[in-house]
Amino acid sequence: MKRAFTLIELLVVIAIIAILAAILFPVFAQAKLAAKKTAGLNETKQIGLGLNMYLNDADDTLPGYRFNSADGSAINPTYLKYKAAGDPKAAKYESDGASTMKAIFFNQMIDPYIKNDDLWKAPTYSNAWVNYQDKGTWDPGFFAYGGQNSYGLNNYLIKGNAGTSASTIAESSNTLVAVDATYYNTLPAQPNNTACKLGGYLPPSATYLHYWKHMGNDVLDFNNLGNPDPADPSNAKVLVNIKARYNGVLNVVRADSSAKGLQTMFLINDLKNNVATSIWNPVKGPCEP
Image (cartoon, rainbow, N blue to C red; front, top):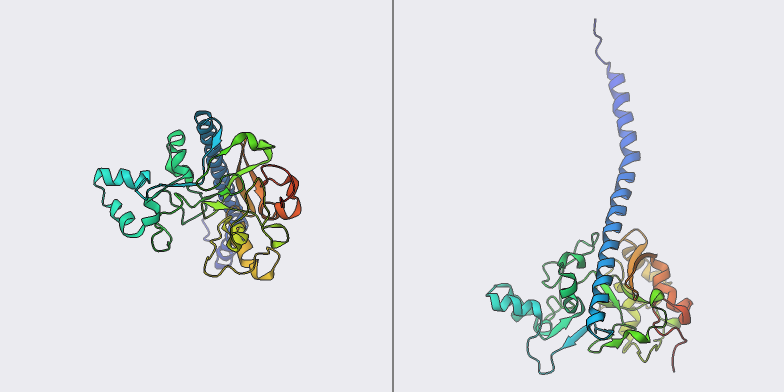
Protein backbone atom coordinates (compact mmCIF):
# COMPACT_ATOMS: atom_id res chain seq x y z
CA MET A 1 0.00 0.00 0.00
CA LYS A 2 1.37 3.38 -1.04
CA ARG A 3 1.86 5.91 1.72
CA ALA A 4 1.45 9.67 1.06
CA PHE A 5 4.02 12.20 2.23
CA THR A 6 3.32 13.68 5.62
CA LEU A 7 3.14 17.45 6.01
CA ILE A 8 6.47 17.45 7.86
CA GLU A 9 8.15 15.49 5.08
CA LEU A 10 6.83 17.95 2.47
CA LEU A 11 8.08 20.89 4.49
CA VAL A 12 11.51 19.29 4.82
CA VAL A 13 11.68 18.77 1.03
CA ILE A 14 10.58 22.34 0.39
CA ALA A 15 13.16 23.63 2.88
CA ILE A 16 15.93 21.61 1.19
CA ILE A 17 14.91 22.99 -2.23
CA ALA A 18 14.89 26.53 -0.83
CA ILE A 19 18.38 26.07 0.65
CA LEU A 20 19.72 24.67 -2.61
CA ALA A 21 18.16 27.57 -4.53
CA ALA A 22 19.73 30.08 -2.15
CA ILE A 23 23.12 28.45 -2.72
CA LEU A 24 22.84 28.03 -6.47
CA PHE A 25 21.19 31.30 -7.57
CA PRO A 26 24.27 33.44 -6.72
CA VAL A 27 26.41 30.90 -8.56
CA PHE A 28 24.17 31.17 -11.62
CA ALA A 29 24.28 34.98 -11.37
CA GLN A 30 28.08 34.94 -11.26
CA ALA A 31 28.19 32.57 -14.21
CA LYS A 32 25.88 34.85 -16.17
CA LEU A 33 28.04 37.88 -15.34
CA ALA A 34 31.19 35.98 -16.34
CA ALA A 35 29.57 35.14 -19.68
CA LYS A 36 28.70 38.80 -20.25
CA LYS A 37 32.21 39.86 -19.30
CA THR A 38 33.59 37.41 -21.87
CA ALA A 39 31.18 38.79 -24.47
CA GLY A 40 32.29 42.32 -23.59
CA LEU A 41 35.93 41.32 -23.86
CA ASN A 42 35.24 39.93 -27.32
CA GLU A 43 33.63 43.25 -28.25
CA THR A 44 36.70 45.19 -27.17
CA LYS A 45 38.93 42.78 -29.08
CA GLN A 46 36.93 43.38 -32.26
CA ILE A 47 37.15 47.14 -31.73
CA GLY A 48 40.92 46.81 -31.37
CA LEU A 49 41.16 44.81 -34.60
CA GLY A 50 38.97 47.36 -36.40
CA LEU A 51 41.23 50.18 -35.23
CA ASN A 52 44.28 48.24 -36.41
CA MET A 53 42.78 47.90 -39.91
CA TYR A 54 41.95 51.62 -39.90
CA LEU A 55 45.58 52.41 -39.08
CA ASN A 56 46.78 50.34 -42.02
CA ASP A 57 44.72 52.54 -44.35
CA ALA A 58 45.51 55.84 -42.60
CA ASP A 59 49.32 55.88 -42.68
CA ASP A 60 49.43 54.70 -39.07
CA THR A 61 47.55 57.78 -37.85
CA LEU A 62 45.00 57.36 -35.08
CA PRO A 63 41.65 59.09 -35.56
CA GLY A 64 40.53 61.80 -33.18
CA TYR A 65 37.67 61.01 -30.84
CA ARG A 66 35.62 63.56 -32.81
CA PHE A 67 35.97 65.69 -35.92
CA ASN A 68 33.76 68.74 -36.40
CA SER A 69 32.87 70.12 -39.82
CA ALA A 70 34.89 73.23 -40.63
CA ASP A 71 31.92 75.16 -42.02
CA GLY A 72 29.27 73.94 -39.58
CA SER A 73 27.55 71.73 -42.15
CA ALA A 74 26.06 68.34 -41.26
CA ILE A 75 28.60 65.52 -41.59
CA ASN A 76 27.36 62.94 -39.07
CA PRO A 77 27.05 59.76 -41.18
CA THR A 78 24.11 58.34 -39.22
CA TYR A 79 22.11 61.54 -39.63
CA LEU A 80 22.99 61.78 -43.34
CA LYS A 81 21.92 58.15 -43.87
CA TYR A 82 18.55 58.74 -42.20
CA LYS A 83 18.08 62.02 -44.07
CA ALA A 84 18.83 60.48 -47.46
CA ALA A 85 16.44 57.60 -46.76
CA GLY A 86 13.65 59.88 -45.59
CA ASP A 87 13.73 58.17 -42.20
CA PRO A 88 11.79 60.13 -39.55
CA LYS A 89 14.69 59.52 -37.13
CA ALA A 90 16.54 62.33 -38.94
CA ALA A 91 14.08 64.79 -37.41
CA LYS A 92 15.32 63.90 -33.93
CA TYR A 93 18.82 65.06 -34.85
CA GLU A 94 17.42 68.24 -36.35
CA SER A 95 15.37 69.06 -33.27
CA ASP A 96 17.70 67.89 -30.48
CA GLY A 97 21.10 67.09 -31.97
CA ALA A 98 22.49 70.30 -33.45
CA SER A 99 26.02 69.57 -32.17
CA THR A 100 25.87 65.91 -33.19
CA MET A 101 24.90 66.63 -36.79
CA LYS A 102 28.09 68.67 -37.28
CA ALA A 103 30.44 65.95 -36.03
CA ILE A 104 31.70 62.48 -36.86
CA PHE A 105 32.81 60.33 -33.95
CA PHE A 106 35.48 57.68 -33.38
CA ASN A 107 33.17 54.69 -33.67
CA GLN A 108 31.76 56.02 -36.94
CA MET A 109 35.25 56.53 -38.37
CA ILE A 110 36.21 52.91 -37.85
CA ASP A 111 32.76 51.51 -38.62
CA PRO A 112 33.78 50.43 -42.19
CA TYR A 113 36.19 47.98 -40.54
CA ILE A 114 33.73 46.67 -37.93
CA LYS A 115 30.27 46.93 -39.52
CA ASN A 116 28.47 45.84 -36.39
CA ASP A 117 26.86 48.48 -34.19
CA ASP A 118 26.16 45.94 -31.45
CA LEU A 119 29.90 45.73 -30.71
CA TRP A 120 29.58 49.20 -29.21
CA LYS A 121 26.96 48.16 -26.65
CA ALA A 122 28.40 46.77 -23.42
CA PRO A 123 26.41 43.69 -22.30
CA THR A 124 25.93 44.85 -18.69
CA TYR A 125 25.09 48.50 -19.36
CA SER A 126 21.30 48.80 -19.65
CA ASN A 127 21.42 52.31 -21.17
CA ALA A 128 23.85 51.39 -23.95
CA TRP A 129 23.17 52.95 -27.37
CA VAL A 130 25.12 53.53 -30.56
CA ASN A 131 24.69 56.28 -33.18
CA TYR A 132 21.01 56.85 -32.32
CA GLN A 133 20.31 57.58 -28.65
CA ASP A 134 17.22 55.57 -27.81
CA LYS A 135 18.06 55.34 -24.09
CA GLY A 136 19.15 57.74 -21.36
CA THR A 137 19.00 61.52 -21.41
CA TRP A 138 20.99 64.21 -23.20
CA ASP A 139 21.71 67.90 -22.87
CA PRO A 140 19.85 70.22 -25.28
CA GLY A 141 21.50 70.06 -28.71
CA PHE A 142 23.53 66.97 -27.85
CA PHE A 143 21.22 64.09 -28.76
CA ALA A 144 23.32 60.98 -29.66
CA TYR A 145 26.50 62.99 -29.01
CA GLY A 146 29.67 60.92 -28.85
CA GLY A 147 28.45 58.23 -31.23
CA GLN A 148 28.15 55.60 -28.48
CA ASN A 149 28.18 55.43 -24.68
CA SER A 150 29.76 52.10 -23.70
CA TYR A 151 33.46 52.83 -24.21
CA GLY A 152 35.60 55.82 -23.29
CA LEU A 153 38.69 56.73 -25.30
CA ASN A 154 41.96 57.66 -23.62
CA ASN A 155 42.24 61.44 -24.08
CA TYR A 156 46.02 61.29 -23.77
CA LEU A 157 46.14 59.19 -26.93
CA ILE A 158 42.89 59.84 -28.85
CA LYS A 159 42.51 63.61 -29.05
CA GLY A 160 39.60 65.65 -30.34
CA ASN A 161 39.77 67.07 -33.90
CA ALA A 162 43.32 65.78 -34.34
CA GLY A 163 44.91 62.59 -35.52
CA THR A 164 47.94 61.22 -33.67
CA SER A 165 50.72 59.15 -35.19
CA ALA A 166 50.79 55.67 -33.70
CA SER A 167 54.59 55.85 -33.91
CA THR A 168 54.57 58.21 -30.90
CA ILE A 169 53.34 55.38 -28.64
CA ALA A 170 56.26 54.19 -26.54
CA GLU A 171 54.79 50.79 -25.56
CA SER A 172 51.77 49.75 -27.60
CA SER A 173 51.12 46.66 -25.45
CA ASN A 174 50.99 48.87 -22.35
CA THR A 175 48.99 51.82 -23.67
CA LEU A 176 45.24 52.05 -23.26
CA VAL A 177 43.09 53.13 -26.20
CA ALA A 178 39.60 52.54 -24.81
CA VAL A 179 37.95 51.33 -21.61
CA ASP A 180 34.46 50.37 -20.45
CA ALA A 181 32.66 53.65 -19.76
CA THR A 182 29.43 55.62 -20.22
CA TYR A 183 30.92 58.53 -22.20
CA TYR A 184 32.96 58.52 -25.37
CA ASN A 185 36.18 59.89 -23.85
CA THR A 186 37.74 59.57 -20.45
CA LEU A 187 40.83 60.07 -18.29
CA PRO A 188 42.22 58.48 -15.12
CA ALA A 189 42.41 60.28 -11.79
CA GLN A 190 45.18 62.89 -11.97
CA PRO A 191 48.35 63.01 -9.82
CA ASN A 192 47.74 65.24 -6.79
CA ASN A 193 44.33 66.06 -8.32
CA THR A 194 46.14 68.45 -10.69
CA ALA A 195 46.11 68.11 -14.47
CA CYS A 196 49.11 66.18 -15.80
CA LYS A 197 50.45 67.10 -19.25
CA LEU A 198 51.59 64.14 -21.38
CA GLY A 199 52.64 64.05 -25.02
CA GLY A 200 51.77 67.72 -25.28
CA TYR A 201 48.20 67.14 -24.10
CA LEU A 202 46.97 68.95 -20.97
CA PRO A 203 43.42 68.28 -19.73
CA PRO A 204 41.86 71.62 -20.67
CA SER A 205 39.70 72.38 -17.64
CA ALA A 206 38.98 71.41 -14.06
CA THR A 207 36.05 69.34 -15.34
CA TYR A 208 38.51 66.86 -16.83
CA LEU A 209 39.85 66.04 -13.36
CA HIS A 210 36.55 64.19 -12.93
CA TYR A 211 36.62 62.25 -16.20
CA TRP A 212 37.59 59.05 -14.40
CA LYS A 213 33.96 59.07 -13.25
CA HIS A 214 32.90 58.14 -16.79
CA MET A 215 34.34 54.66 -16.34
CA GLY A 216 32.34 51.48 -15.75
CA ASN A 217 28.63 52.12 -15.30
CA ASP A 218 28.98 55.50 -13.62
CA VAL A 219 27.52 58.58 -15.30
CA LEU A 220 29.30 61.84 -14.50
CA ASP A 221 26.91 64.63 -13.55
CA PHE A 222 28.48 67.65 -15.24
CA ASN A 223 26.29 69.93 -13.11
CA ASN A 224 27.45 68.34 -9.85
CA LEU A 225 31.06 67.24 -10.30
CA GLY A 226 31.86 66.60 -6.64
CA ASN A 227 35.39 65.86 -5.44
CA PRO A 228 38.03 64.78 -8.02
CA ASP A 229 39.88 62.50 -5.60
CA PRO A 230 38.76 58.83 -5.83
CA ALA A 231 39.76 58.34 -2.18
CA ASP A 232 37.33 61.01 -0.96
CA PRO A 233 34.39 59.40 0.92
CA SER A 234 31.94 61.35 -1.22
CA ASN A 235 32.94 59.19 -4.19
CA ALA A 236 31.99 55.88 -2.58
CA LYS A 237 28.83 55.56 -4.71
CA VAL A 238 30.78 56.52 -7.84
CA LEU A 239 33.20 53.65 -7.23
CA VAL A 240 30.32 51.22 -6.70
CA ASN A 241 28.84 52.29 -10.04
CA ILE A 242 32.16 51.94 -11.84
CA LYS A 243 32.76 48.45 -10.44
CA ALA A 244 29.24 47.38 -11.39
CA ARG A 245 30.15 46.95 -15.08
CA TYR A 246 31.83 43.56 -14.54
CA ASN A 247 32.04 43.14 -10.76
CA GLY A 248 35.23 45.14 -10.21
CA VAL A 249 36.79 44.54 -13.63
CA LEU A 250 36.80 46.75 -16.73
CA ASN A 251 37.69 45.64 -20.23
CA VAL A 252 40.25 47.69 -22.15
CA VAL A 253 41.54 47.94 -25.71
CA ARG A 254 45.30 48.42 -25.98
CA ALA A 255 47.26 50.10 -28.77
CA ASP A 256 48.53 46.76 -30.08
CA SER A 257 44.84 45.89 -30.73
CA SER A 258 44.70 43.40 -27.83
CA ALA A 259 41.98 43.38 -25.18
CA LYS A 260 42.15 42.56 -21.49
CA GLY A 261 40.14 42.81 -18.28
CA LEU A 262 41.79 44.94 -15.58
CA GLN A 263 40.86 45.86 -12.02
CA THR A 264 38.87 49.08 -11.77
CA MET A 265 40.95 50.66 -8.99
CA PHE A 266 44.15 49.99 -10.94
CA LEU A 267 42.71 51.80 -13.96
CA ILE A 268 41.42 54.72 -11.93
CA ASN A 269 44.65 55.28 -9.96
CA ASP A 270 47.40 54.07 -12.27
CA LEU A 271 48.39 57.56 -13.43
CA LYS A 272 48.35 58.87 -9.86
CA ASN A 273 50.55 56.02 -8.68
CA ASN A 274 52.86 55.41 -11.65
CA VAL A 275 52.92 58.33 -14.10
CA ALA A 276 55.94 57.28 -16.16
CA THR A 277 54.80 53.68 -16.64
CA SER A 278 51.03 54.18 -16.58
CA ILE A 279 48.87 52.37 -19.09
CA TRP A 280 47.26 55.77 -19.76
CA ASN A 281 50.59 57.39 -20.66
CA PRO A 282 51.44 56.93 -24.36
CA VAL A 283 54.91 58.53 -24.07
CA LYS A 284 55.99 56.79 -20.85
CA GLY A 285 57.58 59.74 -19.11
CA PRO A 286 56.87 62.18 -16.27
CA CYS A 287 54.25 64.93 -16.34
CA GLU A 288 55.51 67.65 -18.66
CA PRO A 289 55.97 71.31 -17.61
